[in-house]
Image (cartoon, rainbow, N blue to C red; front, side, top):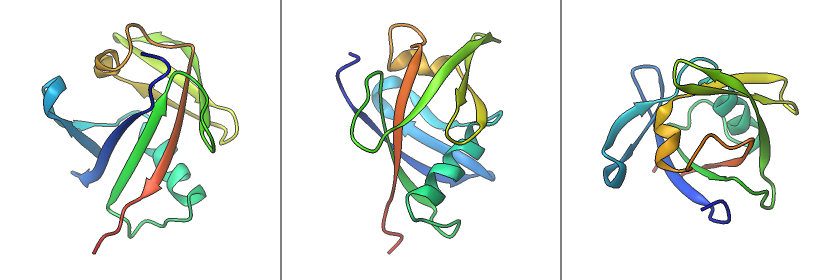
Length: 118
């Protein structure tokens, strides 16, 4: 599965970024513990601003054009901590990550794209 670039549609709910994935049985799955700050930084890097309430998150275990690299930094509470060196940020990904990877990858490459709010 590491060659695939997956896409999640993110939106704001309860003051954080969340996503739905019917196939994985996830509804309003929140990003927490540092992950929202990483998404916000990627949003700004993509030329968006905080008025954007919908994003597309592309991610893969392998690099792809214009992707940002997050590096495994250990496990905690059945989830995984990742550092994003180019942003000097760190965030935690919950066990729902395992819906997309067989195990927590050593590196996750991601990109945020702004969706039209109209």
